[in-house]
Image (cartoon, rainbow, N blue to C red; front, side, top):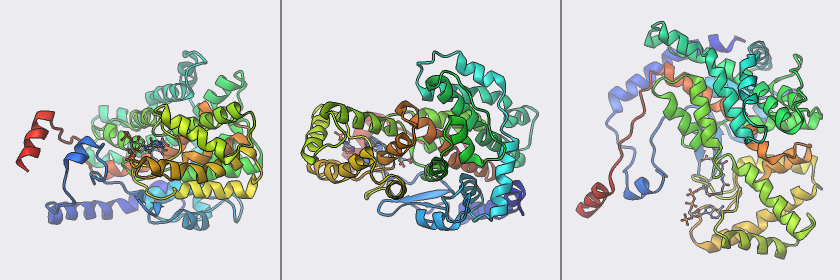
Length: 435
Ligand code: NMX
Ligand code: MLT
């Protein structure tokens, strides 16, 4: 079956049964305790929601529907044999849990192209902002304007039955995924290229088309874009963007409202904006030393200087991971293959040796190792996409691939409104004193 909708429809009844049985037979089973540390510490380590697409092991990193990054690179269809996975293939995997064939991926590419037309008012909404507005602000504004087309909202207003919610949600998610690259590319060309827009090319796959609309047609960049989107698609449900989407989607907000919530979380410097911050940090070092060929001692000095001024080292640390992020390693391998002598790549490689011992010495950092944001920017920079204030938009386009499928499943499984309990400081003290 080459049609994603039909494939999904077949899978839903079995998963509905599974969830129903779990609730009925095992609803009372304890998954862990809530501690004061969890309440005061950003809920770290608290298992609190269901997320189908991927999970993150502290030591091993992400698995997409049970598959590691190298397994995905091997199994998911590429544009040409032996190439990087196509984002469409990851979308199929995240939504269905099944590895698609090349024919299925090609059909999904075609489906997304057929849904890609963006209404003019979305561009006009962006145009209403000053060109200096941050790229993420412009992007989120354009996406917000797309909400006018929500099928879910219309269906809800016409009284759609709960059992059918997933259907207009599917339509919205697919339309949103299809339309977002043109909005994102519009922001790029408007902000950095004097509004010289490039239309979509109907012969290209999703990642290649996005790169093309941005103005980059080097085949290596197209491969990098496919890999980048695939790697950034999903990172289980607890990260800020996925968690924000899950929360905002839970009162039946449509997929557009949900995705904008995710983007606004992603725009925070401790989450998705870190890829911008990494490049900025690197540019500052290069500027201060006067050359990208920086000695280990000079780098150490700059790391200490950053920490002494009360700032974090962007691209290092993680809320869950306790080892080097395998997505960092995957992007690094791409760089080793295609740009081994790039001065900024060499600098980032040196940082990987310099930063972890210094962060470890602080005695409080739980994970001193690099995360995905530590090396993604230098790759875009190498291919000519040098404007780092755009980098989080690239992350946002990718995250849609994980958030959409989960929202469709949330509707298909009838997941409820999210509403955890909070506690006052007085109550927390009272409960602590009793323990
Ligand atoms: N540089 C300096 N200090 C750090 C760093 C770092 N890279 N990472 C953690 N710490 C500090 C942290 O600020 C905290 O200090 P304090 O107690 O004074 O507030 C202490 O170490 C303990 O934090 P952790 O428990 O290790 O980390 P947490 O789970 O709270 O936060 C991050 C995780 C990712 C927010 C944190 O490591 C960080 O700020 N990293 C830099 C920003 C970054 O790269 N973010 C991108 C994450 C990946 N993504 O794409 O979202
Ligand atoms: C992500 O990809 O969302 C980041 O690594 C942050 C996280 O998982 O918490």
